[in-house]
Length: 538
Image (cartoon, rainbow, N blue to C red; front, side, top):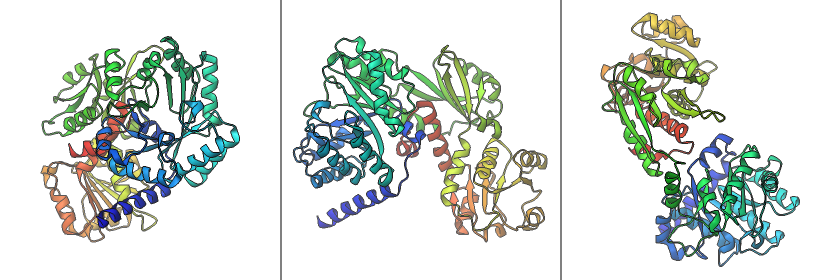
């Protein structure tokens, strides 16, 4: 028992240290974490420990847990910290939203800003991922906690909130509330909750949000049963309840399932089909990976294979009304471009598309097929995590000349490495070298490297040739322990990777690239954070 307590204490401390060292999340990260069809569960227990077994069941369908500190029976700061620690342990470290809701804002805490904000500080000390800041109070109270958070607790996301209880508000008045919650751009997200006296009020709060041209994620809701629709219409980070909770945290609150089912019934969330285009792709794990993610979040999407060497089948699928997006692999990474309306700057520079996204014109609603490349991130991120520059010039050797090689060249250029490229067809290697400002080499040997760039070995090696080729490096290349990256994921241990292990070189398997680029695809399609664990285990 004592060992268990000690282990838990170590985990708590480790989490706090990580949070303390973590920088403020980027706007892009906040938009993903508070992405479309995301939810947080508003807990209403006066004490968490008696509900230990229940907490693990409550996490299903939620992306974060809101600790309603005002509803706790004991609000002593040290007890509140214990409640936070206990909540983390029982919910697999799900992010915590720390909320102290005052009585005037539909909560249970006394309307005393001095004591309220003193308690709010403990949310920062406890490493809360999100902090709810009531914006009904004077600026001096708001800015004191905001300045403290930005100076000493930068990793915490600040949500400016305002609740209107029992008063009817028109659109101009609601827009003023959104502006107040933005607090001159000092917060990361805003939440405005009005009271619905009629069903049309649900539309008003969202119309006010849209007309406010907010530059941060927003939550727009209405209290009362007549405001239920506002929760269905709310795209991001919707507060939800659960049938196992003692009572709802706010009038009109729904469960995740109720909201998702309503969105499907109202065609806010429609059935979509996603595909992988390529040949051969019968062994591709992409369908399992993405279907696992869709299922995790209850999205009405399916991911299928579209296997063909020709482009005709792919072209027909792209025209389908229910087409949601696609992953593209060989031999279609270049020839899919002709069927697209637009291509990103990154995909254009690389010269290959591995992701098709469906966009819609905001004014006309017209469908646009957009090409992107996430392969380079699947190469860049794993290598960046291992690479340490030991000299002023470092070299990356890319083997191959197809779409994956182009992504590798782009990734290593972004990492600041000098580029070398080798391919059995010398002309293709020269074309690739010219495109990315690298050097083509005619053979894999130390002498050839020395003549080309004045160094006998590469610092990073990226192979993009098939795993079945049995490709290996000259042994002399491995003496200086380069990072060896093999884009092939079948077999899991290629001849090249076995060679890297034998020579004690750091290495990256192709499966890591597959997961990383797949996660980025999932996020582009769904506009929310991907379930990395689910997708990597698929």
